[in-house]
Image (cartoon, rainbow, N blue to C red; front, top):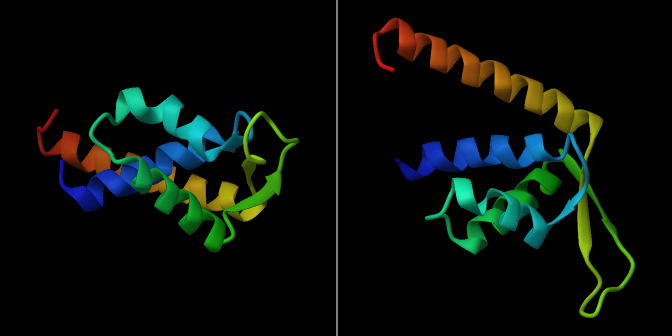
Length: 103
């Protein structure tokens, strides 16, 4: 799959996961890795930083574990609105492609 398209789909999937709960970077990567096995770890972190930079997520630090303090990401209202737009765009693209006979 073309890299830019894959990044957009991965961004949609990452943001969608935050509807169910907050995640820290490694946790979201482990959850989505089976669906995107060829995506580098660094790509997940780039997406998380971009989503945060755009105000679609907020960050907080959890209690310390046996290692460094974990940075958790939580979807914002702005992020929910953006996600709704992404899902609508995805549905329009999917419907267009299907109408062209591509399944």
